[in-house]
Image (tube, rainbow, N blue to C red; front, side):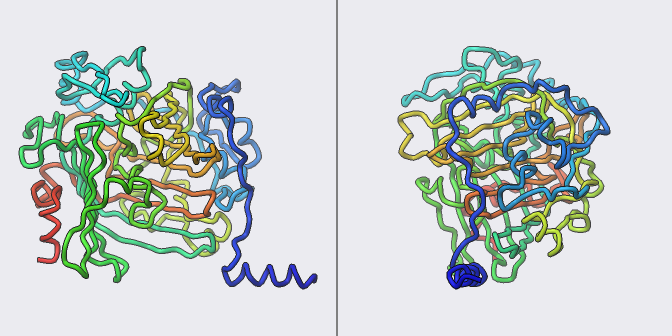
Length: 450
């Protein structure tokens, strides 16, 4: 062996040089806009499979992030010929929305209006509860769709166990266990709750994580809150056990990783849409059918670690852990494809060059993101795979932010983050977690070790 190549191989082994994987070229505007074009191929029928052999036939039914896993030219991939990483297409399900949300939409629908913010973004007024824009149309159709996803139905509180895995390019996994609680604090429709939580004013969404494992992370906790004001930065606090105090995360740190994961602080949101809507320009690239997971079978998610493909052998093949086939239910679903870019007034604070957002039309759920850096090179993929839940104490279903699979993968730095929510309790069954003054405020964080 050539001495030069021998030394290079040794440096890779000890981690001083990183193996080079395929790097995407900068995407043109035409290539990005093509992500919204419907496929010319008929959709895969129920019972069919999307595999490493035929994925190109169905690629327009997948976001580019999922296409990249089938292509296999980055570190993370679906191993060719392995049935555990094939997509089996199920019949499309149609689930009714929660009855309280439908009633609120009938009562208040059509009252909300978009308004222009001082720096050119679009805010809203006259919104009470229910679907903000029941029939989004031009002008600003894309922005209305995003507001529907941002403000969509969630119960007042969902308490869950969560499990996280962070995987690096060497296959080393850092595993985390945590308690989580997610809150919708304004524009509520559930019976027994006011429209706005009186103890936490001006906040639309909030979530809190309490880490229990690994041992060195025990008692670490974090609160992230999204304001009702779409022009306001996300509000985040971390409780540091060694200091026995909560510290506020700077609003200027939106482009920093959230607690060492592949999500940025701007990304972090239990509805998969943490962005400040008032800072963005949204463009509807298209409406098309796509393959996604909005109604995964619930039983495997009651004990997800029993089914996750996270052995050393599995990670060596795919580069990351991935849910077993029986945990997912892929369907062909009507989807909006929306391009989001920072407005000129915020260009210097932009985290990404382009963000392509895929919103399920029926559920108003964000199911995928394709994320591009400022040079328009593909940077990250992001997916939400939901377990649809019956709404608490009423008829109807919604995509639970507390129950299912969330993953982000960074193809440029070969790092993968995934979280699983399971064993969820909602609203009145959430026990002490109904105390929003404690679990949605920085003052409440101070009580963690009491």
